[in-house]
Amino acid sequence: MECYDSHDARAGPERASVSASRGVNWSRLEENLMTQENGNRRRWTAKRKLEVVLEGLSEKITITELCRKHGITQSLYYDWKQLSLQKMEESLTFAGKTKEEYEKDRKIQQLERKIGQLTMDNEILKKTEELIARRRPKLLNSNQGASL
Image (tube, rainbow, N blue to C red; front, side):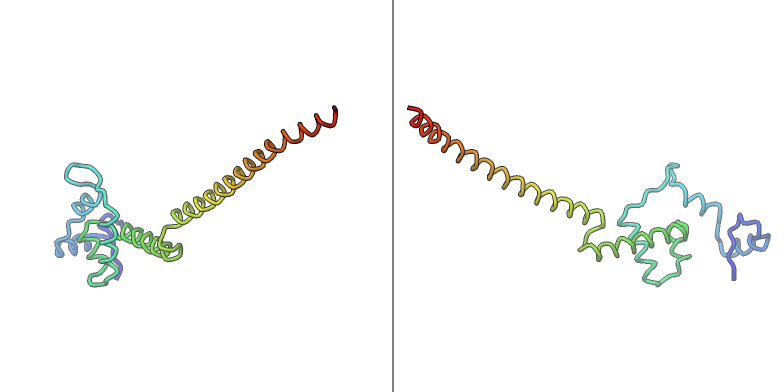
């Protein structure tokens, strides 16, 4: 059985009577989906989105009922579900981190290795400079003795 929205041209008058018998106020539902009482769009926290997605994955109620219960569209639910599953997969793929966190950590490790290498190079240059400075007076003294 196909389900049409009340604004759908295919719905016809029989849809309105079915909606009325079920007690569904489509215009009110659409208004709830878009705004809060103060007129602002609702903001969902990541935790709340995850709770809704997990409730849908539990299959205790249908997605249609779930969306109606929380006042969201099914497409929004499926967007949240897809994003959640993608992030879960990334966290398993990249050692419990998101791909971005993993790449940042990798870059930090590369830069730390480079800093270590440059620090060692700097120490070697300092020691070489000290050795040259110690030998220079000996070389100058031996050159002066030969000219006398």
